[in-house]
Length: 412
Image (tube, rainbow, N blue to C red; front, side, top):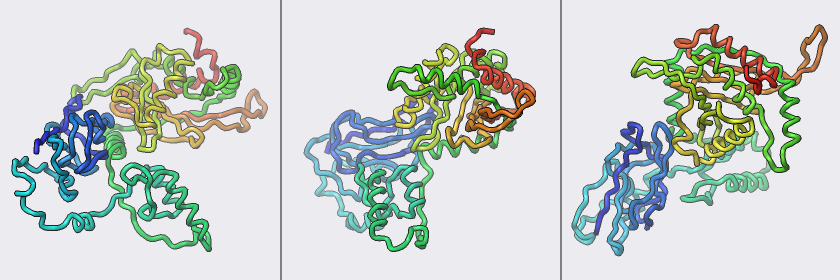
């Protein structure tokens, strides 16, 4: 047996370990060079690991959720070309087994058959968070659903078929059926990183929240006007590019809000460039892709770049560079925006602006009742470095530009 050991690579930016999120191969599989064998997660981004050689998988280290140190054995290959595959019972030791030069026939027999070991190991249901939520609402135990995806992963259509099949033979509504069982979901990958960062942000940053309502009637008229003149097939403009364009102008007057806190050096880094993080909900959880140099982009360019990086995040194709480097973040729940929210700061930034839903409602304008389109901005600031007065003044300046959208495009 010719054994090739591949160690966890150095993924940059001071990474000392990475979390195994998903194995794309198992012991005994034949792989080719550059074939993706695993997905791992650092504190910055998810990274796909390609195979360095062509061969057969001899052993792998770490189950999903395990941390593997940089330089430690991650996977071993048999590159002899004709060696038999090792039994499935050898899968995933916590520490890689030492290499041996003994032929397979001279090795001691396993104490237990592979089937017994497999039976003792609980089967992990593989499905996206969205599929899990839908199954929970429908009262479907995913362990009873056959998955048609890679490795038995349950796709959306698999769940739909299961729901439809159950409905066809049901004698009473699912809401009246007693449910049993508890699904254990390991906190790994993006969800683990989100949990750690949110906890750290709320624990270490004294948040100052500020909510202001904005009359976006004129902005909506401008948006509708511009959308009516777009070429057929061009995605419509949302409020986000207008908000980012206005934010860029406002931050020229409030540079303390376009800053990062370097805790190790006890410094505040005020940036001239505006790199806007766009909080994006994905099947894997919340990600924040970044629109770089928003100050140098037109409205159309901003709209296109927001769509591009958001879609890259949703499809898990965003690069490390596209997920890092933001200096201020904008978050929006779209149609689910609610009346107000208290967004959590995306550390090490010092400010975040949240967009709530826009609704028409009666207001008093010029001494008369009129129907206006109103939207709330919910913001949070790091109160250590942004005073409450400055935070309120920044949001008021942003409100003024959004209520008079022509001023977004006029140099002061």
